[in-house]
Length: 308
Image (cartoon, rainbow, N blue to C red; front, side):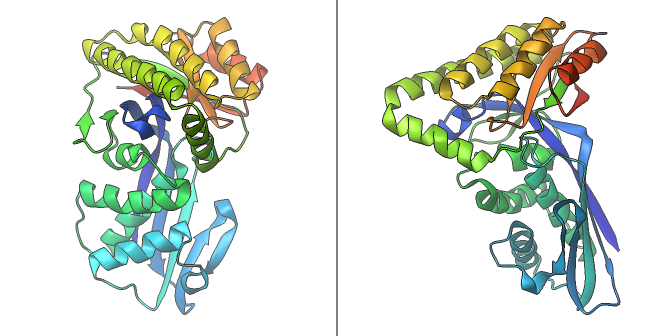
């Protein structure tokens, strides 16, 4: 038997603009995880048991472009090590699906690492991230690569597509409350919507992307300098730009307003938008009050996490 797990993630700053050559900041969320276990079974064939998405079937019945099937086939090709004829791959996850928390990337990373452990072959983090990125293309069409990077390395990162990975040393830990709207939202569709807007008015959208990139760079300086309180106004600015881009929603805006009213230093949507999750920066001792206010404002649930 072998097993592996991978955390969720949140984007702190830079979503959507990161697809257009701007940087982004993201961090892992270890309170939620995807877990994969591979073990022998009496039933012939390679069986996939993913109860969270109501999937229990043999691998050979899945289309090659199914994200789970593609991850398995791509990983086994790299490992050059086939699975036994009777094996069960059990996948479980506590990461909300279609919420901007990297559920697809986490499942891919956990699956890749469990397969490598089963074959007793070591894969580098770079290999794991590259394999997971191939599956991200299936999920999102034109992914930035930030999800697979953060989930693989489990560190806060400054991400600029095409550039070497830069991990962030956080000068002072800070607390984020995550609010889930309960509205499933397709990152692929949200990315397509932004692209349509960009193609219709490139100058305007590139101005928005550039403004977000400037926010990201300032936020990185605050993180490394140990002044996380400075991030609050930057979150508010970033959210306003995402609203102008058309990727917020009434549910997200209600949670953002509710968080600010209850003591958050700043708040914004996180991820693809149009649903999914928002995040709020909270001062010491305010996390519980902000979490309660988010539930009152309509959040399905909340997660409090420390970025350190």
